[in-house]
Amino acid sequence: IPLKDGMIAHDNIFQGCVNLGGVDLVEGEVLRDTIDALLLDEWRNDMNVEIGTINQILPITSAGDDTDDVGEKAQAVQLWISSVLHKIIHYKAQHHSLLNEAAATLQLDLPNDIVNKNVLPFLKLPSYT
Picture 1: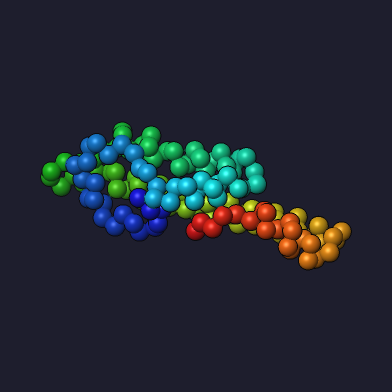
Picture 2: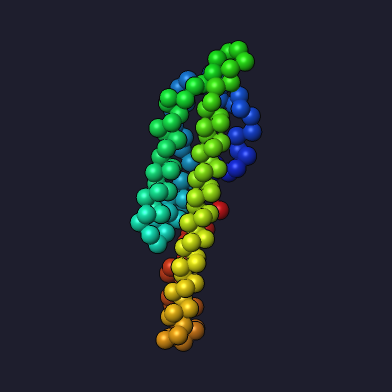
């Protein structure tokens, strides 16, 4: 599925889907590239754990039945998507903040054009979210 808020619009979308035990992301490679480029191991580890949690939660989450029990799989996926998006946006902001601090320090010792053309492009994150 795409990692997009509002993607799962109805709580009954997975009603009766007892075999739904995992999720594959449509743009998983781009997200993994972004995670791999984060500056701190702690951030990368946290994101990788967060991404993997849905595949641990879904197999033990109720799928509901044919009556009015819609189960909890849709809600679990919705919460997971929101959590992953929130964390990646937060870590990207932290990453950019650290880069700006480093660039300011470098600009004290190096000409501005060298920092902007030869240093910062190698430290930018792949585009995701």
